[in-house]
Length: 167
Image (cartoon, rainbow, N blue to C red; front, side, top):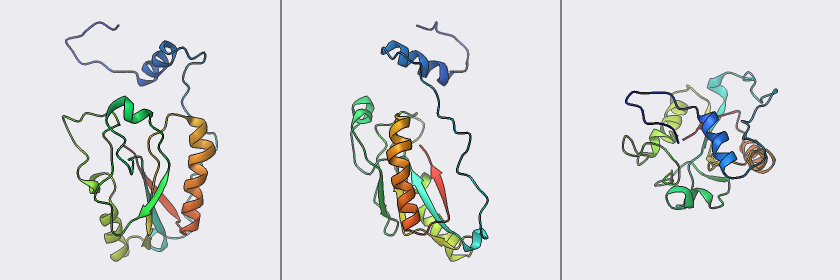
């Protein structure tokens, strides 16, 4: 266990993740995802002509708080942007819940702002759906199952670019 300090110090999340995996008996230390060829590219048309979509890591179902909720299976989803859902769920994720909250959907999934940008011509269109990729710690599942499904929906909706609003 680390010694308590009376001053601020950095937390190395890479080291903490590796220590966590080692403590749980994993033979290989955790490695962060790395892709030499990321799917980023310049837009093929002006932003004012593009259909823009949003991806969130919030869940569309309440899986409950803490580690129990985090361990429940959650699937990717696509929901209509208009009307926006009354809420999405984040209680199973770990962040400073004393300092902030996610009760304001627009603070992490700005669907109304995206529609405003479309109305003023800043973007061409807002996607009719938004996409959810609940936090998942399996790189294999993310790469082989979740990402292809999200891509399928994005192409189906004619989306030119997406913004990931991760929590």
